[in-house]
Amino acid sequence: MRKPIIAGNWKMNKTMAETKAMIAELAPMVEGAECDVVLCVPYTDIATAKKAARGTAIKIGAENVHWAEKGAFTGEVSAQMLKELKVDYVIIGHSERRQYFGETDQTVNMRTQAALAAKLKPIVCVGETEQERESGKTEEVLYRQLTEGLKGFKSKDFDKIVVAYEPVWAIGTGKTATANDANETIAYIRSVLNKKFRGVGEKVRIQYGGSMNTKNCKELMAMPEIDGGLIGGASLKAQDFSQIVNYNK
Ligand code: PGA
Image (cartoon, rainbow, N blue to C red):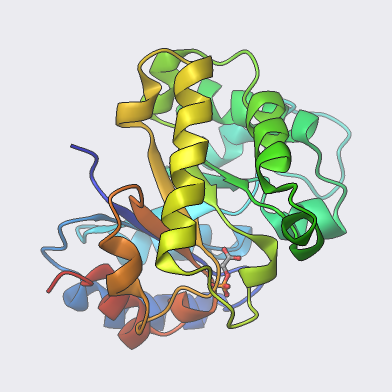
């Protein structure tokens, strides 16, 4: 049985004061949640978030990590730095990183290696653009992102690695993949991983992300292949996010 995982991706939102207030409000609402509950927050909010989440069901993640141990990489943050902050998860290869900051399958691969070496749990994002979907290239794109991005990993690494399927056209647009489409595409992702990495199909957790909200979360989470959600906009309000976390209540 795969334990569902609902993770918020705050992106570039919330100051430290806002972080503290939101977690204080959220914590009692998600107590006793049956899924893993994660908030991935800006670097500047991590220490505040860790402190506010102490003793609650909420785990804290970062939104990116550099692959090098240290060095001349102005503006970057290493896995060891995150480890010292006791970060649990880290998002890698989000489509906004791919689109605006030159992220490639190769850098996704290096970042994921660095995260695992520091015992962080990577949430590796994959997904096709609207144009790729319309030209029938969804599977080709996902195959490339998965096999290049996760090249060289071992089956046991997938005890830690979570994959997030986020169709780019559904992110922040209010357009969601239908539950059936998302389920079907995630089944494809699972089959690719299972072929490349023995026995991984059964155990790897695969989330859906892209305009997941309080209205559609039940239907999406009811799908057999969907093990959770990566939530952007709807993770910024305690009320909304807690409703998604409690999708089964
Ligand atoms: P959204 O973002 O829920 O606002 O569409 C999801 C994501 O980018 O992870």
